[in-house]
Length: 472
Image (cartoon, rainbow, N blue to C red; front, side, top):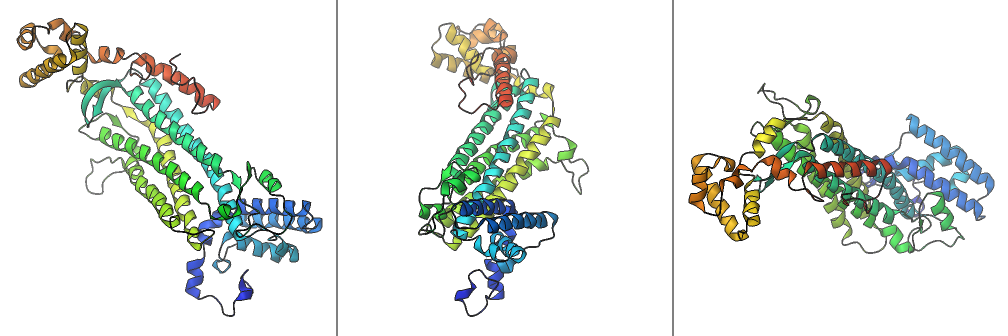
């Protein structure tokens, strides 16, 4: 029992299976750098407060550097007998420097230690996630610039609705990913409070300086309530919520790429490096990466549901159930970061079939709304115009022609207020160009938004930047 940090209370060893079931080392070992950083800050504070001698501090800092090097090189192997990353590091430190290592845990508990390490780790991973989102946005903005005038059908209900530009369509996802980045930034800000010093649940009797510890670790401030500090997992819920929403955006984008690459659409072709073939059908080129990204969303959302369900019935303060929090959020972050990397690397090589896009936009009566608008401008009430155009579409379906191909006789037969000049002026180019306002699909507007996004991404402007959407 001497190997256990809590072994003094017990008379018999832990059951072998229970020991393995209880351990979290396989999950939390990835936080070793954060655990060592937290221990260094804690030791420095203890020394400043006269709780730890300067000789012990020097030994602890030197020993932690050795432990870090051993972990990095693979020399130190963690054991489940010590349950988690925290006790594995402390045990090795004590083996290296003796009693000074045993004094490190003064005025702290694994309860505040683990949530401090987790916040430090997730803070770093959140910054990396935002970087991934920014890179993907940059890729999409470049594509939007290239395809500012590439006309395609816009859809509602997956039915042809109105013509848009591909650049405008891609910028819609830039907006979504901007909100995703803002959610991660917002969650990061609330997460950046230091729990260290809360100890097990009630604080400590030692005269610690929690502001010093928070400052050394780059936190904005210490947490204000020790009970809340050790039992709070809101920050994990928020990060998983942000990750889930981001994964849904990627899943929607994936669905479109999958449809667009099908023979029935033929809008795009994804790079070979991001597709696979069939073991039996030699003609196949499958968009497996978008399909995997679409599938990963369920896994990430599952992590959010898991942590919400885990915490919902827990009394204050710490409970062992909380050990499950890291499994959910680490898995979600790993998978979301992979999804963002796939998209950021794949989309620059995407080939766009502009002719197919234009042909698709020119069929399916995508210009019907513009014909109704023309009638309204001629003084026809909108509801009458809607009915006239509806009858015109019905005529064209029967005759197997598009609206712009109607002749004067057909127009007059449908309604005297419909003249052939109106239908002759219909074109997808004119329809797109006419939507020349902030948020519209006109190529000029797309290029203005591209320029604004390029400026923002280059300068790191925030989501609340008032210059966005100004049209200036």
